[in-house]
Amino acid sequence: MNMTSSARNAWIFPTAPAPGARLRLFCFPHAGGGASMYQSWKRLLPADIDVCPVQLPGRENRMREPAMKSFASLAEALASALSAYLDTPFAFFGHSMGSMVSFELTRFLRRQGMPLPQHLFVSAYRAPQLAIARPWLHTMSEADLVQTLLALEGTSREVLENDELRQFLLPLIRSDFTACETYTYTSEEPLACPIDVFGGQQDRRAPHAVLAAWQEQTSSQFQLHMLPGGHFYLQERPAPLLDILARQLQYQSH
Picture 1 (cartoon, helix red, strand yellow):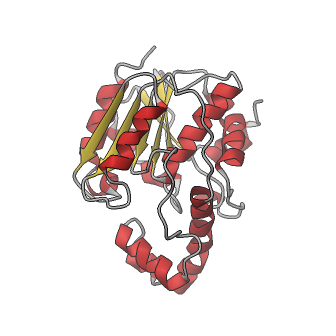
Picture 2: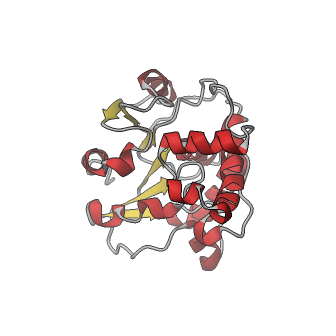
């Protein structure tokens, strides 16, 4: 089902159009994060790749909307909102929580008989069939949650130490972590598209072993790339990741 242009556009963060692009790359953010984290990719990836940062409810220009608390409801909403964009070959990239969003969206599209991504890129998140480690972040006290976020280095200290910004951000992060930590995996056939997995060599939340287990989710090619940095390696040093994406996507034009 196609939505109106204004409704559809709410899900795609405003970026310059890419006329003549041969492939769309939909990019999904981490817990508490917004689509703007991918804005620079438009100029850093080849011009024939249309980078489409996906804006989830509850953040940035959609901050007044309630955040969703389950991947199932989010996948259904995304499938409807993005349907008009799936007329061109496309791929998904998700970082951390965005990995699960892109994975569950792909499986929902398959169940609905809709177009499927030609490639799935997931980053810094355990394979979906693995149980999540305790302690859960969404039930932490405010002080413990702030310390955990500081250790992950994905949220600036200035934001977390600002009372007003912190009181806005923490409910969103708790909502996102609720979706992650209450997720129940349902076994389905492996995906037919290739899966590339990325991780930070110093990321203790998503070490090599839990990333390698993504191989069970594809019947096609699988590659695991461990890159320098921690959980937010893609912000610390984006070049190695973007080089691999550009190389892999050049083969996905048809």
